[in-house]
Length: 217
Image (cartoon, rainbow, N blue to C red; front, side, top):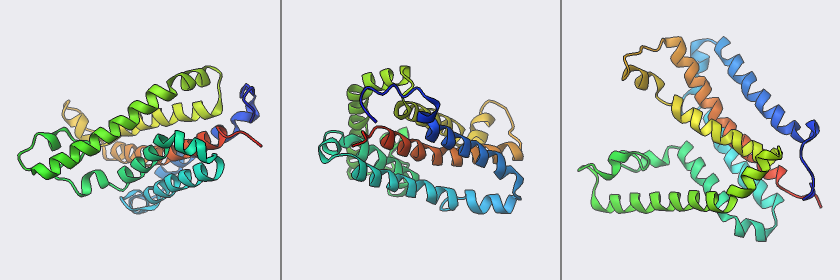
């Protein structure tokens, strides 16, 4: 799409509408499955977690297929972020570390050795650098794009909402119990559905943003 396109027609947002519809449709359908079926597809390493990882890989394929090499290099932090999301989905942030890179006690626990601590801090700094670069270099385009209802920026906005939502829902039962609130079994199961499908929605939104941010030749 050309630089001057306003991205405001309903047709230009079709992919975003379809993706959101698919996400809500799956969330609405899964509660009708029996508990065993839900467990099989929602468990770690199950259908939706695997699809999420494959979708992140597909995002990288789209970047290499749709973007010119100069853009891939200049905006390398997008590819790096997608790889980090994929590794996070595979639990690499926890698998090889005592508490997990994203856990504060990883950096203050006596159980963490000095070499592991150094590696953890280095990776954390790398993550922060990537996030800082994205904010500093893409903030203006993002805000302008959202105001102009561009599909690419709206897809990124939805992905940010999904990141916040899924992070909030993660371990919801435990979080509510700390406030003296008991979450029912059905409520806990629905929260798991929203979390897993919401996590799958993040790379879907990335895919839409990548394709929408590509000029047609």
